[in-house]
Length: 108
Image 1 (cartoon, rainbow, N blue to C red):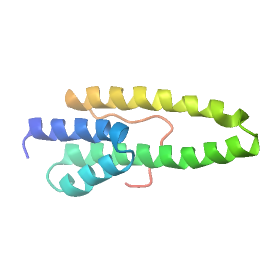
Image 2: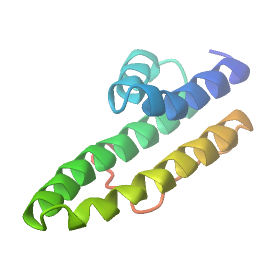
Image 3: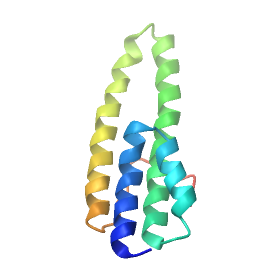
Image 4: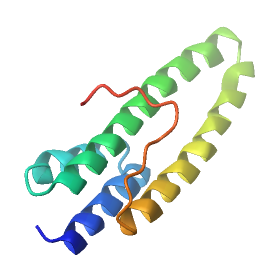
């Protein structure tokens, strides 16, 4: 896969998580990881980020239930997640490797 195609798919991997949480980046990474190092790296990074968001979603839900709704303020974190995904997509489109902060990297 040429460099422009790798940048495109890496960008889509980051943005697809906004529309199809976890499954968008995961499918792109699984299908295209063998076609280029850049799309493999950024696909893994996007997938790890969205796995982290799913885990946080479960934790936030438990905290919200236990605090009778007061923990729902934690869901504001998802605004930051959208910003990070957009920043990652912009960096990937420029051909730069992006690392999400505070991400559990389960896939290496």
